[in-house]
Figure 1: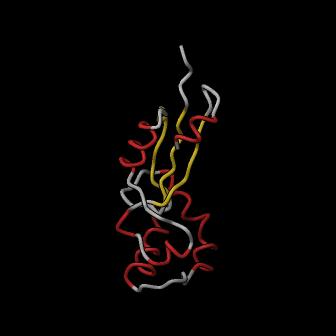
Figure 2 (figure 1 turned 60 degrees about the vertical axis):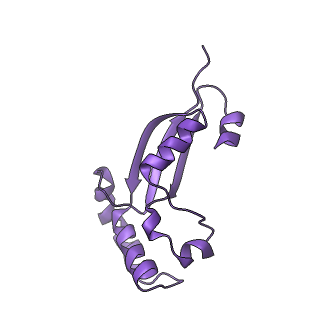
Length: 117
């Protein structure tokens, strides 16, 4: 985050999507390159510690989080099952992303590098 901050022009926007809920971290996460999962509070602190002003931060994809919980944490799978059905239902689930829920597979943040002045 500090490297992005250093490269970004003043007033520039940094948008990121990261894995959410540390309790969901499992072997499959590591297999696909996830080293950690964040809480909203933790991500906000890291962005602010890097100098950013956080404009928006929210969880996304609550249905995906339930699938992750079942497949990765409870069943211990290293490969997701049922993704074809999930992919077909994504448009119907998109309405859930309009509401802030306590569960989400990812955290989306929009942060800005302040303009010096």
